[in-house]
Image (tube, rainbow, N blue to C red; front, side):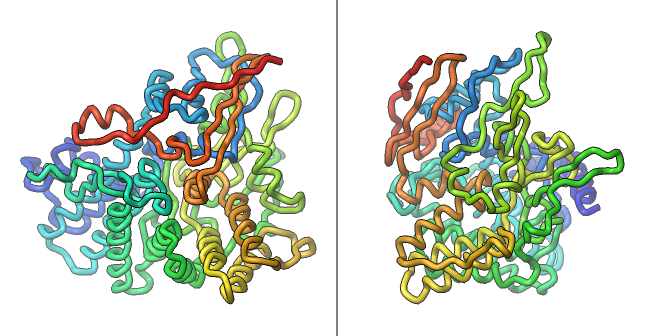
Length: 520
């Protein structure tokens, strides 16, 4: 019912605002000018939220990390070009051009994020002109700041170098108004540090506004931003900046929020039969409010998972059928112990010929054909959830060391009790700070796999070497290597964006990455 309301609101918004470039600029000649907070709220939903029906976000970062590996060669179905995946899987500096030529749909996520930022900016620009109660206006203002901070955090971590590696490197341009400004300085890239400061400003501003609201309005299961969403993002931001005390403090605020609770994987009955006697496989399904961990769901499910199921159940005119091009990597699977519930519930056994392969579907809505995520009303691809707060807290306390090692261990044990059968789980203890830090990093990898964290974590943990193998033909394979501290740990800006902005400077790029080829 809540999602129905949101859908209706978006339709109203879409009908009201005919020209995107026009209505997002205050003082334009558009016939529609928001007069109250209700109109601004609709504008936010229509133009500033990463809704579950908008594609074009984060469609490749999973392919650049080490939690996936390619499956053996298969003959593609008609009309499919594997370069849509190989481009980022092999860390090519012209990856966006390759994806575009492979007809993989919208690939310019740089543009996608700035469109949403423009929507948030429009709301902030209009706020002084609307008449409404302070409470209604503040609610809209808090959402706009929270969203803008969230988007700039993602942009700078995709297109800028890691903060802890070089905070003075080029980040992204900071566009803080929806219209054209006389000073064109905003078209130039600011430093990574400057972008992080803007992220902190926006998140802290949202936090201050939320804290002034009645407690029952600081969070609601209505797909909007909230106080705990902002606090979790502040924890993540400070963690990336290696400001450990602040990261732990904000993580603890989320952990102590009584609205949320860690999902006990022991309570999930993995297989049941529906009324037709068909076996249905049950999973945590984190990006929904049916889950007690979910703080804020967002994103189009195909953007997050198409790489892991594309082609499944599809045939061409020659009856050629594809399986997924990728599966969970052995290096990821080897971090789990056999009795870890997550190995069964996060990593799904999907059909593969006469056998199965380990896939990454267990955290999203999936149907009776359990290797295909459901695309239905209320289904999102990702979410901010409680377990990240526990892991942010544990990592920050581990890095502080000393007496904080006990605090980190307690948080890890609290999570562990919900991820193992009680008779199998033995409380963690660590002989050294180094051992604890290594465990926390592996635990982040296990718990948050395929949720968009791993690539960012690899960047801030030293940008290690990664090798990927691609199967070109039945008897031919090619290996690609991402070197330690490789330039491609910072994603190139799409050429399309540079062509539209002459002040936009490209990242330093390596040569096209050539493979080492092997024949069986």
